[in-house]
Image (cartoon, rainbow, N blue to C red):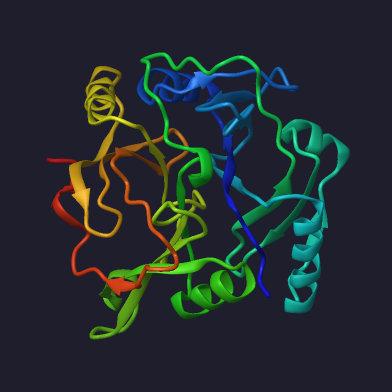
Length: 299
């Protein structure tokens, strides 16, 4: 028995410059400004959920936490019991935190590398249709808001923790030379890509420390033209391109990467692979991409 996570529900980002985030989220990514209980926070919508991305003022720039949706109270209670048996300490969300996230219940815990996870149920959704600034439609639904890549220090323990404790399923792997992350020459470390729903991966990890507590967050749109238009907005608004347009091997997504004001990247793509767990076989991809994705930003 493991935790039955349905999807990634939201991310919360701490920021020293909300003005930069307003420009980046609204004008570069084309997210829709939402409303929320705290006038000092930014609430961003991509679908009917009240807020998928929340940015709040802080003295640091980093990912504060990610929220993962379970079905209902019974599923969250089962998660509590499972975490207790696994020896993972967790805390209950306060009333203020529930009101801020607009969920009925939540618990919070940290993985062994201090990445903060929240499990929740009962998030609110809006009667007002979402109208994004550039008419892009984001791919969410049963796939959740997108995917997240977090930094870890031990790829073996990370795979065990995320699969055996949290219930993620291995979808794909990619190896890299250990010296890239400070290990001895000739050694190998693993990037693992993990799923919980038809999205190829909702969580992945890179065995390398990162002060922003995040490698990247991915948003998916429904048409290639929306990716191209977003790429033009990156140039127009002077955002830093981290990787050129390309198509990944593992999830087949056509995307680019742009540096966020939080110090981590945002992947913006389309045509991501949907998988069927009953038929899926985990394999090792031999390259990041079929083509493109120059992480020198094309320079």
